[in-house]
Length: 233
Image (tube, rainbow, N blue to C red; front, side):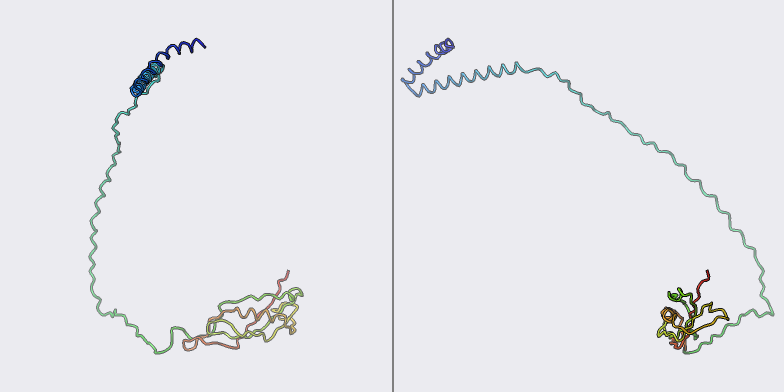
């Protein structure tokens, strides 16, 4: 190691001595000259490094693919020929109608008598008539009567309004029986077991109202009988 320092010292010592003498003579000229030498030395060092670097690069041995170019093609469109429809057959000529020799009838009166219109003033499009029942309701059988096996009927009185609905329903009488009320031999006894169910069912009845002079009028005092019969099992 001492030999290396001795060799460097032997090289740089003459340069150092020259620089000292030049600096003592003229420091500006010594500075310019010394900096020029350093710049020139650095330039040569860079050239040497670049040359060494280029020589160390490896050659590119990769294979380049050629550009693929698709050839131009002309696409032909094949169209199937469509047969033209045949011309329709000529229509036959109109068949000549037979000539009829129509002679007027003599001695016969073929005229039709015109009906005479007989209009009366007043009235309406609605025909006069009595009320007609449109919708009947089956009343709900009272549970107490069903459990006891009691049958019977109730008579309800109500009013039919101008619209055909029912109002002021009131049960006026009710009778119970242990047998079918339709049986002539059935024995009835007065009871109120069917009164409420009959009155509720009467309010659901629908009628075509009574028409008088083309106008609907209410009808009061209408009677309706609801019969209660149990199915015999």
